[in-house]
Length: 125
Ligand SMILES: [Zn+2]
Image (tube, rainbow, N blue to C red; front, side, top):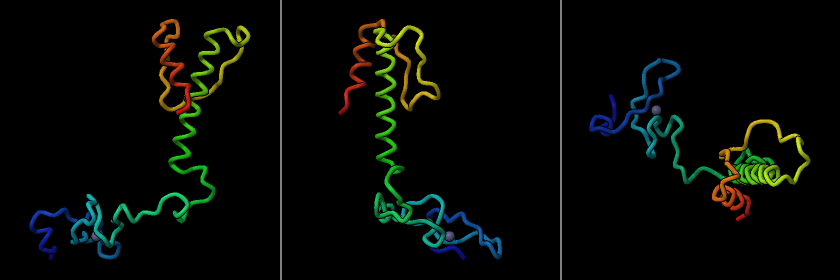
């Protein structure tokens, strides 16, 4: 028998019992769309972040450091494109290989507006 809150329109937990195969009848908890408090739902403010998280090792793969790395890669790639455009490098010198950094958009550096935009991208905030 589902709880009264489920009967009155609350979302029901979608987890099926491992032993019986019957769907859990508890209401979804803490704003979750999927699970009740017994099946993995939790308050987001209780999630440990950064150095307090149990999987934290060295801080190189935190969301903040990954975002910082992506910004740096984008800045370096833009600087390389500007360098090739102003013929800073030897003619025909190889460009950095591989996938372009996240957020990269090819710019037409002959257009002064786009060149100014590219230079603004390279400035560290
Ligand atoms: Zn449940």
